Image (cartoon, rainbow, N blue to C red; front, side):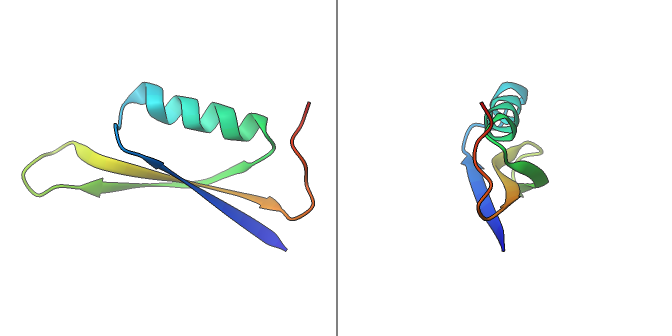
Length: 62
């Protein structure tokens, strides 16, 4: 069975997205998608949601 993990990023920067991707893929999660929440008054995203998946029973890698 496929498991999902969603990481909410409140301060959307290159570094925060990179950190989320590196930490979870190192723990055995596979990157599935990235979604941004926008404000009408700004061109920059106010939040981001990073989605990861892995098969149930898979454990983190050493």
